[in-house]
Each structure stands twice: as C-alpha cells, then as structure tokens.
Length: 418
Figure 1: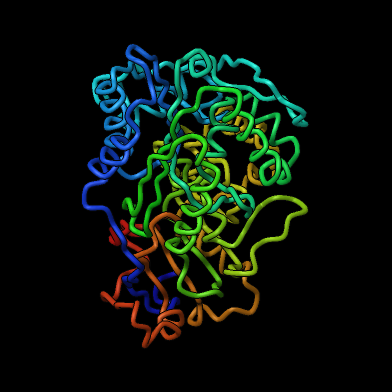
Figure 2: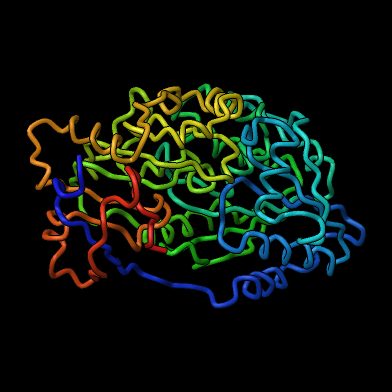
C-alpha cells in the first residue's frame, strides 16, 4: 500500500468550550483557606494522590501540603491507586515520582505501602480496607480529577468517592469490588465510600474538573460531609466539557498513544465507543470499524491495560508491555477482554493495510479515517477527505492544511497536532 492509494489527509483544529482557571494553585489555596480549623497543631495529615495524569497535579499537591503546614499540620503523601503500579509499594511510589510528586518538590514525604487496615463494614456486602498509613494518620485529604468513568455511568463515576473506596483500599479493595463486575463499581463503590467517610479520618476532598485541552476548569476544596453531594455537581460539569470525536462513523481510528496516564483503560471508552466488558453493551456512538494503537506512554510503566479495545497494535507498542504489571491490574479489574492482545503489525503501513483488509468492500479512496494523538487530546487531529467533507461548514472546525500519510519508510510521521 502507498499513500497514493488513500484519500488526501488534512490537519484539523476543533474548538471546544474552554473554561480555564488562570491560577489553579491560587484558586485552590483560596478554597482551602475557607476551611481553617480542621486539624490540631502537629496533626499528621495523609494527602491521597492517584495514578492519573492530571493537569498541574504537582502544583495542586504542593499547595495542599503547604496549606496543611500553615495550619500546624504535618503532611505526607500516600498513593491512592488500587492495584496500579504492579500492586507494589515501589511501583506506586514511582508513578507519583514520574508526576513530579516527591518530597523535594511538594514539601511532604511520600509513604507508600500496600498494607491495609480493615474498617467497620456496617452491613456492607464487601469488606472495606484502607491504606495503613492513611488509617493511622490524624486526617486524610483526597485529591482527584472528577470525570465520566470508562466502565459505567451512574451517580458517581471517576472521582473522590471512587478514590476513597478503591484507591485508598489498595489491591485488597480493588479485588473485593471488581469481583462484582460493573455492579460493584456502580452500586458498591458509593456504599464503601460512605462508610469510609463514616469510619475513617477523611477531612477534605480536592475535586478537579478539566476542559478538553487538559487544563483546570474547576477546583474545589470540599469538607468531607459534603463530598457526596458536591461531586455530583462536578461530574455534571465534567460531562459537559468532555470532548469527543467530531463524527459518529469511521472506518479506521489511529491512536498514536494509549496509557494509564491518559485513561484508566488506556483508551477512553467514552471516546472510542467500545466498553470491552463482556455482557455490557457498547455505547451507541461512535461506531468505528477498526482501531489501531501505535504506542504506549512511558508513564504507563508497561501497563497496557485496554489494549484489547484496539484491533491492531504496532510491534513498537507490544514491545513495551510489562505483562506482570498489566496482568496484576487486569486481575484486579476482572475485565479480561481488555487485556487480550490484538493483531501485531511490524510497521504503521502494515497496520493500516490490516485495517483496510478488515473493512470488506471499502474503496481505499473513500476511507473515513481519523488520527489522534490520544483519547485525551482531541482538539487537533488528522482526517481523511471523506471525513472533512462531512465537517465542512461547521463553526467549530478549522482546516490547517494537508499532511502526509507516511513519512520515511513505512511509518507515520510525527503527529504535529500539539
């Protein structure tokens, strides 16, 4: 196959809503200052931080630690990421370090352990666990982004409630809840989170909402009793800002990067229209015949969970998988479809050839294809001429110019959309 057999390709910019805080750290500090008096002098305060790539995360953690210190407390960081990082203390500390969260950068030591303490379950159908360091502290502050979940939709999805339930419960809680499948996430997580609020020392939640450009649109410091109600409003805001693909029907979607820092499932299911959970229906849209994934982000540390959502991957991506790390996360999640290995192509050209062969009857000149940097970054993308024809006249679309399908050899050129 050569690029001459394919329709012209264009670089396109799409405009999304862009509410953005000019100084997220300053906004958070002002929010925190409203809640003085929550801790006694000398109180040891655990700041729970997860494994997602969140805009300005290091700054927000540093502001929180500085505020705790100004209140007379002694802050420290605990990883709150369930079974991620290979379900090891070292792996989880390394994820935080990769985000720049170290004692010298945020002003608080990192205490990483997989040891847990069992909490009062008060009739809950699952056992409830909490990170031992957090449990033994005098107070817990939970920091997380709030956004639609990749496994289900409900009152609470990805955010503070889930982090209190699964993230702070380490591998034990991840396995305990995920063995109930989607019901565990939709129904049991809120029950567990409410009991964590009732029977542990959570004092504040820091909720973050991002816009389609990976910028902080909203940040709130929420007293523990108000977390369940305020998270609902923040999730509604996140839903309104969430980006998506510009069309509903594609033959091929090319994703340059997947990874745990992009989405908990590597590829955001809300963007690609595939859930990858046996017995659960896929979203109605978008409808994509073939998905090619080209690379795995370094911050994933070899965890390619979600690879099963793609149809074809490159040898480059496959070679970066750490199966021990991925399978630990896969085991905890229980959704094995997401860990199945797709067709492996030795080059981008071969991957595209495989994908075209899997679209019977398709005239290559009529190929409806989009290439994106990741499912987290959708404001600039490449689209084939048939897709561009559908987008003509839309006020949110700007055509930046033609681009080439292939660079040197049989590989796609560097994505120039950032």
